[in-house]
Amino acid sequence: MDNFIVSARKYRPSTFMSVVGQQSLVTTLKNAIANNHLAHAYLFCGPRGVGKTTCARIFAKTINCQNHTADGEACNACESCVSFNEQRSYNIHELDAASNNSVEDIRSLIEQVRIPPQIGKYSVYIIDEVHMLSQAAFNAFLKTLEEPPKHALFVLATTEKHKIIPTILSRCQIYDFNRISVADTVAHLQYVASKENVQAEPDALNVIAQKSDGGMRDALSIFDQVVSFCGTNITYKDVIANLNVLDYDYYFKLVDFFLEGDVAKSMLIFNEILSKGFDGNHFVSGLSAHLRDVLVCKDPQTADLLEVGATIGESYKTQAQKCEPEFLYVALKVANDCDLDYRQSKNKRLLVEIMLIRLCQLSGKKKNELIELLKDDEPFAIERFFQSTANVVPTINVQQPEVVRPQVESKPTTPVTPKPAAKPSVVPSKPKAAPRTISINNFSLNGEAEQAQTVRAEKRNQPFTPKDLHQAWVAFVKSIPEEVHLVNTMQINYPEQVEGNVYKVTVSNAFQEKAINDFKVQLMPFVCNILQNDFFELNVLVDENRESHKVLLPKDVFEKLVEDNEVFKKMVGELGLEII
Image (cartoon, rainbow, N blue to C red; front, side, top):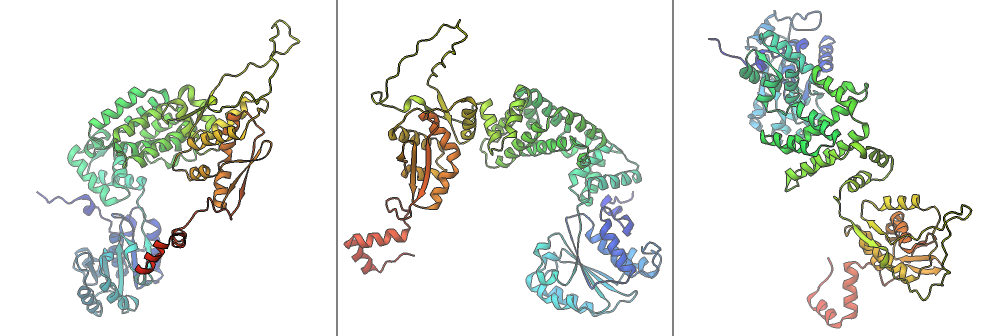
């Protein structure tokens, strides 16, 4: 029985033409060989399994070939190529820097560099995982790397370029290898499957390609694993079962439930996914990716960004026709927020279930409301939408009767006798509005202002006193979250009457002035609603000489204590205390 050879080794490229997914780099290397423009040091860097070491070996083999083919490849017939293929070439030396990273190893390499090649033009030294060299080894290697003998050529390979010192980087030609695309990986897997007499569904190979994350070595290793599980017939169902990949059908069903607003079925699907052993974070990230794929299918120009099989691609296009762009925009934000909060959450399942509930609220009769909110330029429009659909965010209610106005000061008004409704020539008087509740929180201040402006047809001019304004000011301060820096500023600065309905607030610095001015968009509608007066004006003035509310630094407090307290002053002198 022959020994089994894994596909990653059996189908390792031996020519530039067989390298997958690195066409631009391969072309550059072939042109350098053809034009005899070879540098003395190269650095191949990029992710794992994309062909760095493979290209280094092919490059070393080709530059020593004595009879190049018409397309610039090695002939595989000369003595140099035959010795390389039989792994007995003395012109090509490989060093694993992960296990040979000391100064002594580099010094041994430097001594070896002096020996000229026996066959061919160059002695090629391939140093893999070069970032593992110690600092002293790098420094010992600098001089040789800068001025090697004419016959010596170095090819360094690494997955972590940022760990290599700049003096090494400046001495090399740097080639950055890219991750191999899903399409290129699938094409190569189909080639390997045909060579191994394995029947494979395109969707199954696509899952393997996505699982490999751009590494061909990983893709071939997964392919061997799946073949061991499935035999010579690889199906999509067998692949997702063997690799523990979440089926696309779950996400398609979930989006349909979101569009229907079916919370119960969405939560049952999530429970089924958890019962199969899938992690909640994996589910959330997969849902985000699914929503993104549905979004790119909305426009034919972006449909090419979808990296799935043909059958699943048609399912994406069908579902994209059902989804409004506004739904997908908000759904992506909700899913992404859940992904960001997942690690910090203590009740992770509840967090995901709340996400599902919110996604189910984005459809049906509330769709038009969502579209209108997205037209606004407000940063919390989406949060306001969820607040309107469910009482998720607690509110602070400030009722109109809290503002007490002395009745004796108001002028008596003559009661208006209601006219019979039968007379069309008389316009009926507007009924007196009942006391209403103003809902204020950190998400809906702008929304209340807009609502008040659209509801009122004429401006109000109810008389008010400084005491009334003070109470409205305090009510607004209480409605602001404590973490907002504006709270402290407004608690120590109250409006003072200038003339009539014109008031001023005097602050001690420009920072406080900007803080109040930035919140006037929320402050003014709030105060005007409570005072029932739309002619209220507020100006913010800066008086830097104010001492009563001036912010004192620790040094100022210390000097003040020394000045006012003789005992403290004496203690400071005896102990030699000072502010650091």
